[in-house]
Amino acid sequence: MSHHSSDRDPALEEMAELKKVLETSKTEFGKTGLHPAGVLSGTDEGGIQFGVSNYAGKVVLNFGTPVTWLGMDPQQATELANSLLNQARQANKVLVKSVKPAEPLVLNLGSK
Image (cartoon, rainbow, N blue to C red; front, side, top):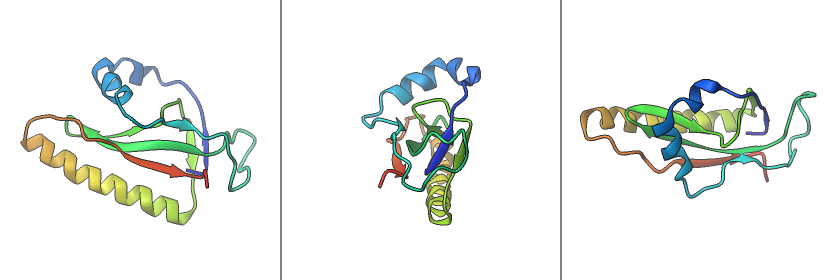
């Protein structure tokens, strides 16, 4: 995504098993330190790389850092929507089969 802001969410920290799965990812998620699309607002911290995956029949977004908001262009929004739909389909299959976390699809929007 091209824009994000951070704020801690204590609910995610309480989900220890999911947090463990998210930390096993081979990809570094979080801030890119770049503003390739300019600055959207005073709280814009720039680009962010994050993963879209599924775990235990749920679609999971791993930002690698606390995030309050995201801003994106229409193409990025379409890519995110497609990723969410694909992971939702896979999560639905997991509900029928044994629970095994999927390798996340990595989105790095806003660092080019």
